[in-house]
Image 1 (cartoon, rainbow, N blue to C red):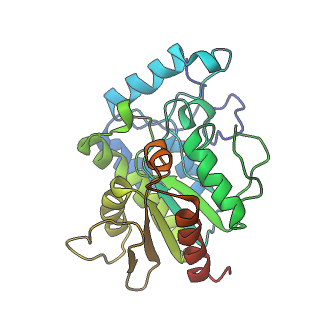
Image 2: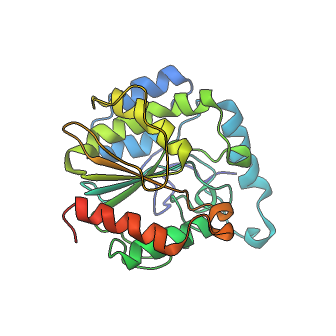
Image 3: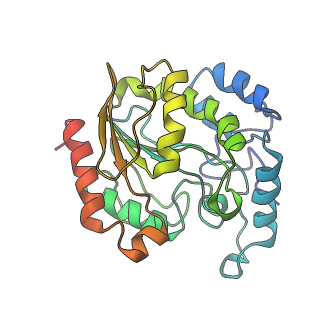
Length: 262
């Protein structure tokens, strides 16, 4: 069974009294009136608005992968994580079934996370080169990681309806953190597509239609941060060489320059 809110998990910002969103309308309301980023993160990690995703994430937490048979899976939505006032924001797709859905922290405990945290460490944006579990001492520097969909989806493919239902969590997070953000690194086309409506809902002027995603694409928003497109750190991309370490390093170095961190 998933880890219950308020039971002491290192990433858990929810409690037994945290309000639970059971419908997309609830998501709009609870994301919109969350008084702080911590409240928002806590509320998002108990969301049950998408029945297919709830069933899948909890089934994975129960059945488990053989390598992790002795571990208690998080089995809940995963919130953004990192600096509360970041200069750089990194936007991904969704938690991995046996990564974030297991460990309770975004990009933690899977090979995609191995790639991303190693690159963040090389860039001086993370204190450790690996992120294996919540509470492992990893810290992000001037950086926050977030995601377009907060539950692990079957075959890593959320539906359009699920993306839209989850969007208010991202929009509310953007309202909280964007005042300090100077660069947004967007990992993959799904995250790129999901980001623009969330930005608009957060009050940011965005071009319509949104420009096409591409690795290395840059878009400066009026009175806002610069968006940087980057191929996702998925195993498919990293194993095939579509995304290489130098390519990822170059995007993060560009983000650092835009953020005044070079």
